[in-house]
Length: 475
Image (cartoon, rainbow, N blue to C red):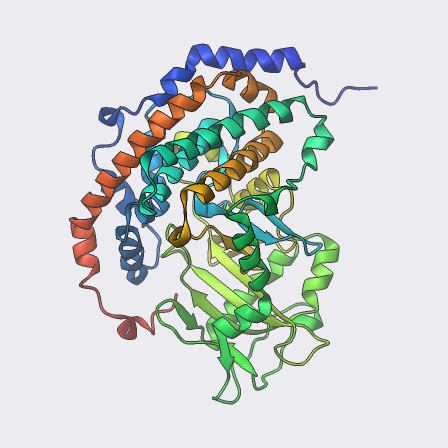
């Protein structure tokens, strides 16, 4: 029998991790040499606005200017450049790329269970594992500062996150492959702040989204939502019982012509789903399409939401919301060898998400519209995340505990847990070094945030026309 592949033996994988210590000693993970970083971080931010919707860029800057943590959420291009200017281990796994405390959360699995995992993969790429670790550690510091949690508690939470990451990586390295592949976290309800997050996720149903995003159509017949394809996807020109609310520039209905272009792009998307999931989706009928502003880092990217109804229920009783979100190159792509291999950025996100998550959105797929790449998924199906307004020292510690296990599992699933565990070792040398880095990078983030608040970027954004003037400029 021919051998199709020859995986490295356990000892060889462990040797890779130990050699990486020579390339980058664990104590050196603490270094942040500002002189190595790009001299104008805001220029990196400005460059990343290329191909975004121009009149929405000020919204992004305003959200980033609100707080250092808000700035951190929108400044992945800056941190990607800063990390690339420093030595790294060379131990490559699939990284989230934007690992921070609000990009982990609860959502519904295919069987209806609520799961907790990384849930944002716009920046995902093959990269050094410590990039994610450093970004998440920094976010714990910034979230703790924003919540006015004392310094010792913030640092204790970061060290606990790093210890959990290290301990679980050693456990995953010792697990049989398939046991790791199906490993679930069973202690979600046992620690703060998870009960509140899970309760919020329980309430975040499609029916609640229906009430939040739509309203009864008082204008009579709506737009003709027709597209080529199976009969269930055809919708006659009929009165729409509910349509998207008008909340420009954050939520704006599309014209019939524009809505048709978006729906036409769902044809190729269907073929990225498994056949049985295509069957489920084809039973829904699209009713309305809108442009929606989402997040902080994604503001200005084209993002469409599609309201669909099931065929067997009264109007509004079986809603499904799809999100079609534009995806650009990962901010890390220009710095890493893996960056050049991705021809479709929506596919990059889908494959990265499936690699790192235990269970992914059953309707996760991708498509292309007018030469741009898009991710398609359900919109906010039972999603919930950390509430920074009610963060305490105890809940920050509990959340850090889960973050360590979740991030470790994602890296172990998509990479080589044996090599990573060998690099980490059994001492807290790596933990202490990353804590030092996180403190320094949080300080740098606050400095860069202050630059933004006094920059021409923000001043010019405050002089742009208001939302009423921009209402007709739906992309």
